[in-house]
Image 1 (cartoon, rainbow, N blue to C red):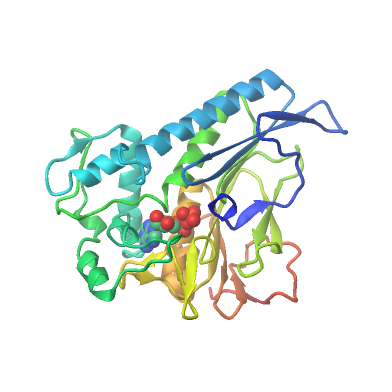
Image 2 (cartoon, helix red, strand yellow; image 1 turned 180 degrees about the vertical axis):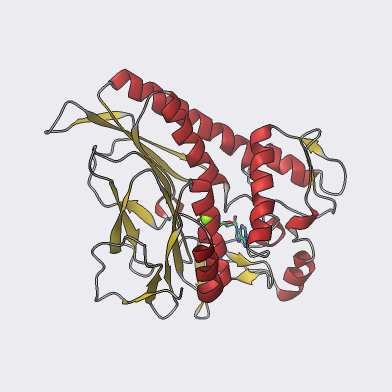
Length: 347
Ligand code: ADP
Ligand code: MG
């Protein structure tokens, strides 16, 4: 089910109500406020620690409304979104777009270069061929035809007039691997603007912590076992950092014993096969979101090389045979040794 499809969730129990709620804590005057919403095809959760209920409510409301705006502009499944209009105008005319969408597209292109095309925001020409709920996959011929429409380098971004243009009909932008992370960063920015100093924002497993849960304690994040949805492989502490997981168990179907999932290798047009789960910790949710998808596509060796080349970045990778491999600095607690073999990644 999409609602709970993601790999990360809070291990710490917090009262969860549909509307903004207030939970009195026994050890102080501060409260945790919580609100959830469904957008960007996933569950959004915002937790704010504050002594001021009104301030918290207003901050969360503003943060959610910013996320809604990003969803309206960047969701390719909404035919009226700006992103869809760029796609509809492919091969015809450029579209003038607001600075935030322009920035996300610019970052997408930059990360296409950094990942040598493993992360490609024009993968929409492939993703649109798949119907996961309907368990339908495209035939090889169609995949090959559409692969010729996948190339982020062709996306034209004109800084003079803030326009975006896909030069070929059939090209298709898909920001599914970046927009949720960007939205989380924006939500955190808005919360800060409203005076909030401690919060956790989660968009379907793309999370960012502002401060800790308490002055001294970080937020505690559970990392889901990729084959046993109710189990955690461990937890990580998070404070003023972001984390994102990409897994082959989030949107998939199994046919003739083969698992088909939603993270595609832009070289082959097929689901990437080298890993089954990738968790990345980084400074921003956008970077963590991009990197978890990119490392998933790159596989163990190239993925680890990429992570090791980036500052303030750690990762946990799970291979198809269940090995867990982390960067030396990855702060995993409580790893269940029954679940997997544990190794440090190559330097
Ligand atoms: P989720 O969307 O479940 O959070 P990810 O962050 O890993 O998972 O992003 C996967 C999404 O990114 C896909 O649903 C698709 O929209 C898009 N995508 C798939 N493959 C790629 C790729 N190679 N490069 C960029 N985006 C991709
Ligand atoms: Mg991602």
